[in-house]
Image (cartoon, rainbow, N blue to C red; front, side, top):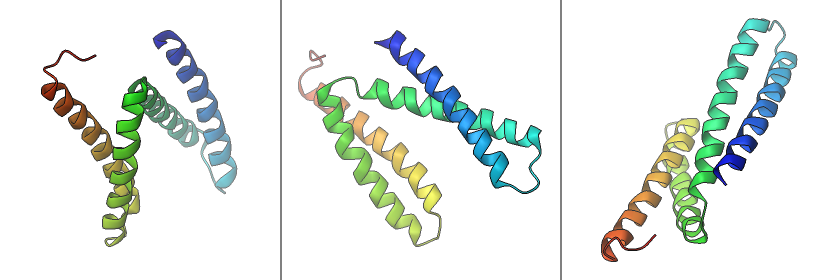
Length: 119
């Protein structure tokens, strides 16, 4: 699973980076190719990290349930709270981070309840 996930991450990230560069280049009127390539590389790396992290988290039905509850709820609350300050982009990032942390805390609490025997 880990090898196929890594291969899929690399392929999709490269495709995403290429599309990002193409769209960025054609959407700007005076785009410098160096700037577009740098932003494309950064977008590719961020996409790869998020893709790999998300799909390595969701490797069992139990984890899909936990993170499927915590991430959307935290995203919604963070977006609503940061919309007051007109910082919705920050809300998305903060909500995603808090949602993932909440899912891991939920797993940690359940592991402590069951004595840590469960895998």
